[in-house]
Length: 637
Image (cartoon, rainbow, N blue to C red; front, side):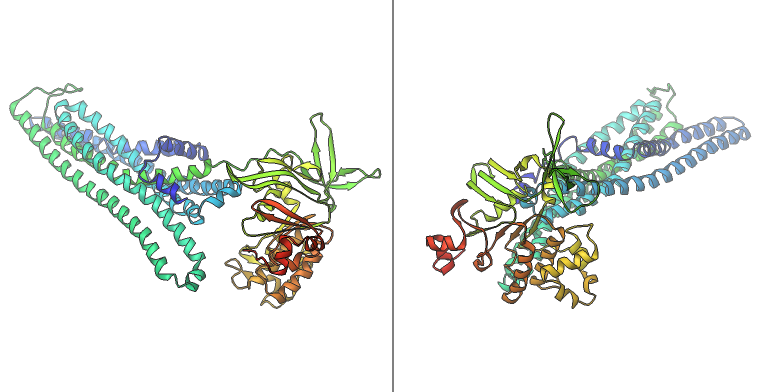
């Protein structure tokens, strides 16, 4: 992941991100967005036309000064000011309306994007979470969303207003005087060059800053999770050095980005001031020389044109400054949008399965049929190409046939694995770390798909079974227990959301967890936070076993389920596990060989191959690897 981030640093957000973002917002708000854009246009255009009214007022004063009727002139001036006042009122209403609508659109878009990201994240394969740091993933919902908020709510509307103002003011300039407009254009060329140079450098560093913030958050998340390990090994100083390295790199790039960004406005402001002086001098010289005026209107150059032109020059320079000032926020927002779209474009977990799990009951002739109500009997519903549907009772028969698997192409970790577990049998896996034990169980629930061979579940190729239905039929207890914020009861019910309180309590008793739960301050209503930080590791493991028990699946996977439990607690848990495994097909991974002596079959793995198989007694008689492990002549590493 770090390499991926480094490869992205220094790159500009790819083309098309802004267009996609606008299409996304329009998809969310197909009516409000056009209305908001119209309000922005009205607000921007009205802010550009005071120069026209100023020219008309000065022209009226000039004509009246040369011998006109002051009473009639004042009436014309009042009429012009009234029209201007009405337009300003419309502009004010449009401005208030668009700011209110933008608040709705911005926050609504961010809320919908968060929902969309989270929903999409649930459909991503386990591989994605194995290859991306959790802190970096969290950065999508915090840092990237926040930069997007600033861009949508502030930068894009302000940029649009400034752009419309530029076009409107330039059109008015050309209408009154091409010569003076050309002077302004010359100044604009210089301002544009300066803005492009400065913004180009700041944009590059802002993009780096965006990536480094995600990297820093990922590092901090990793350090917080490993705080106990850091303290146990007195690694505080080294951790601080590592953090300082990441933080210093973030500081340096952020500092450079803001140095360029902070110098831009003073530069453009001073260029605008110089341009104002040059326009004033040029206008005065043209008036004194009596040079003919070139304009769209055909009007002669006069004080009534030069004075408003000076104001338009200021307005023009200010609009360019506003656009340039928003460039950095737009770049950061686009970087955030790019990362968000990268997440949304991640390929979802594919599922070509069409066999589903349904409630069923057995008919008089021994065949199965689907039943609309809960029966506690399940069957695989298998539709066929000819339109017929067959039902196979869920038994828990799992078989591997010559299975090969690799996490990465060309690096096979399982070689020609064949095994079977009949309904109700207990199959145990033994082997050193990296031998492939957990990989086999990951293939049963299709966290990963095999490269070659077949896996059949009740005689059905598991590739034909919908993943959600397949996993619904499996219970799993992992070595690392995850508990969620909520009550003890809610955490147990996580295994079956339809379970009653009585069923959850029965599952806890089966797992041996009821005793310690009853001694908690509020029993089953005790609130758990921080992954059950107020419980011991053994207690958390007992809750995980109870959660699997309440699901009542026909197949159980126990991955080092007792590895974190002391000897006394293990005896309690073992009794609960024996009751839990009764009548269920069970796959057990255990370093403690004492927990698997009663297994129907024990598979000894080494480098992805099954090198021995048999019952405990059979393997002891063979005096091979298992015998050495059991007698202590060989240790599991």
